[in-house]
Length: 146
Image 1: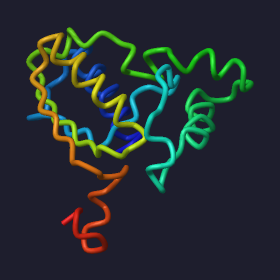
Image 2: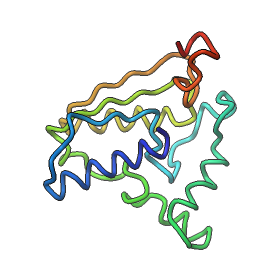
Image 3: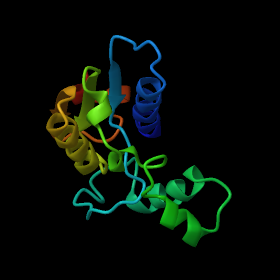
């Protein structure tokens, strides 16, 4: 989930590139796939768990031991932000993306879905209305997550 969803996408690309055996499919739970935040976030403040400033800080951590300015310049590289990579090699690989409509990252998830579809990737997209980032983890706490 989250950064793990982005890492799963990166892993799938590496598996395909190295011609390793593929699993039956990949499940991306509310994935974070663009550390560069090149779009305006219309959900800022709707999600109590994550915010753009928090993710901006995390994106500098994702690129390693670089200055903040260098980290920001690296944040759109495909090895950090798999949304910026080609999806064509993933045709024949199955994906499912789970998203919440109120998630700060939902715009990235929608863009990933569209990019995968355009490349001919076998992808299912499920977006739950009014749900926040990580909503499935709240099963038993909020009725919408059950």
